[in-house]
Image (cartoon, rainbow, N blue to C red; front, side, top):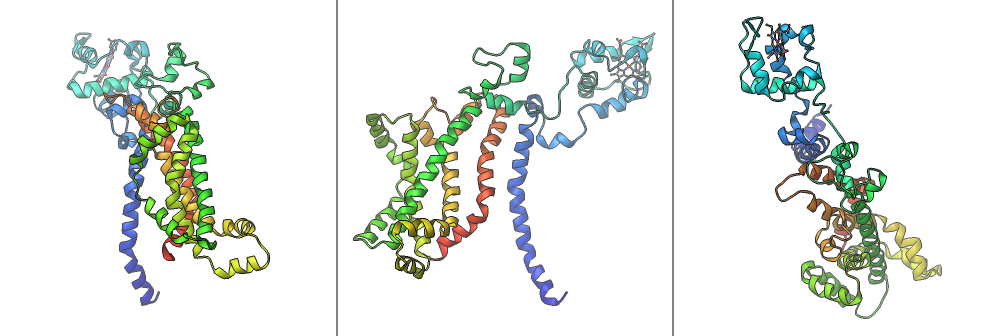
Length: 394
Ligand code: HEC
């Protein structure tokens, strides 16, 4: 290696550190969220997600105090088989266990020379005994948070347990139709898709037309109109909620998908037109002139030239608009409300005001992240190109 290359690599080290640091900053919490969403409720409430890899609770204490006589497996003394659920169910709390440990066996101290464990250790041992005897069969990981969130279970009860015991509420049928329960994320996912796909597609389609017109059609007041459109970007969305919902009330559009599509289209278009015009305006003029000379109409020029060439801009706009509409709560809340809940609405309803049920929140958050992540990774190679194209030439 020559000196230049070494220098180059050395110079890059700070950049690499910053990039790695930035990746860690979002990957670690995301991983924590994912792990939490896969843990059983009790575990979520009692220990942090980073403890999943530590040894299970109580096994160390058990080995320290009890394994010398009862064996590591708990079956060394046949008269007192600690893996026997019947025996262990006699000690529902660590108090009873401590009493047994303090009592004499055949007029000898139970634990002989070993000191009896103090309260905390005894509680941990009790947990361990419940686990090895299979009374409290609690898996380390479970999908039950996802299932509960999908079918719309709230609080700390569990869909699977309720359905197995036949104690599910009336609106739960314990079959696949529960996925469409209006309180669940399954139904909300469908609603979110129904809102997001047209609300992404429509503004981009109109913006592509308008961008083409602003860039390549000569008409009067072109610059003025474009300036007005650019200026419209500063109008805050909240300002229009009242007039639009009054208008929608007259038109009967409140609570309909059409109303939301129109709203998002209206608010997506100024920026989309701005970006499309800049992108299309930066395409070489010769391209269009030779196309027109060959007898192409504006229509063919648009379909054959503009759409393929503008793919990077369309993709990056698509990502932006998709994410915005998908994560939007305000518009969905005002114009759709609870009758047609979307995912953001459902998530905001997941947790009770007392904070119970946040294991469901982790699962719902992950469910609602899934599609944006897929869209982002599918379109990301266009994304950078589209951003640069809009920014460099204006
Ligand atoms: C010095 C050896 C020794 C140690 C240490 C010891 N045990 Fe025992 N344990 C015994 C013997 C012996 C019996 C009685 C077996 C019988 O009934 O004949 C017994 C019985 C038991 C029983 C059954 C009691 C009953 O009422 O039937 C339980 C439960 C138990 N041990 C739990 C523990 C736990 C938990 C620990 C650790 C904190 C522990 N033991 C530590 C020797 C020991």
